[in-house]
Length: 371
Image (cartoon, rainbow, N blue to C red; front, side):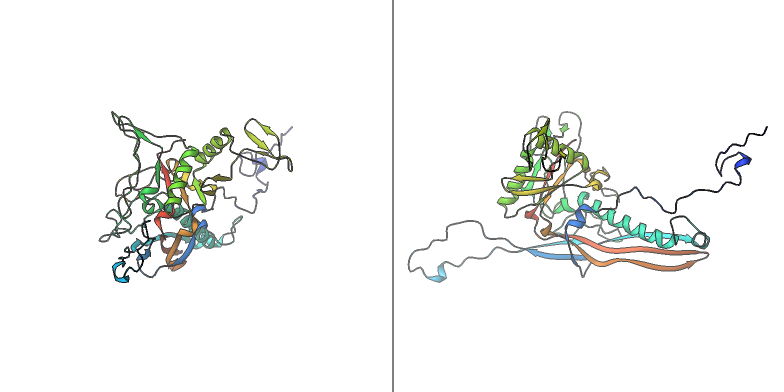
């Protein structure tokens, strides 16, 4: 007696050759498309490839008293010069080419392959710039150079968050054998950024764990400089590290009683709360924000190649107020329809923008961290 069995429409069994395929009419994209840092800051307009702005601050604290009857001409004081900062715009672009046949065939989940690829490329570009803004450390912001990349016909690259942070607002968790603390600082505004590298030998660098005291220290530095940070942005692994440290320190509160270990359980909804979303420091409340892109960034730290200048994502924690940051757009993201190339439709997505730090003293960073 014949044994009629099924191996599916694409199987080798000839008895299944008439079976229809069952392909769902959608495409499931697992990759996240959020841009945590760039979505949190403002947007404005750039009008040149080197976008500039001015910063200012109050004079150093001093006695303002004068003697009775003092002549006005003897109390004049030269004002401090305003700082002029700038950043180069970088051109972000993704190309695509779709054959005429690919656009004509009936596909599951895609009405038009060209339109689908345009949207996908645009999402990738926004993700890539978020990684660039939070991790790229090459460049001089005041002199207007980017480690030699903005000279001649080389690719222009926008300096990132770590290139702007004032050197006084840097806290290092790393130590060097025989040297002690003091590594992993940013040299100066307008200077090359230096982060701790995993050296070997006598002066081997040891990265440290994220501590609440480091957050407090950085917040204090920002506060004393005149700023007030509201966000702490870290990679997913450092986000867990922060919650664990806060729980271990008993620093969390909840809306009701009850706990399991160090986790807090809220009476009103029965949820077990392990994460810490808001940290109330001595210098203001700060929201703890995980940025999954900081866990995807390239690990290279030094050099002038196209992929150089990226900090190890799990070794930095950004502390900032979004009001001091903008994406300045010279050309907004748009489709350039190149047209037909033989039997294919060719196009690209392109934008030109840069990162603007309205005042570097309003942000800080913790460097030299390990999971």
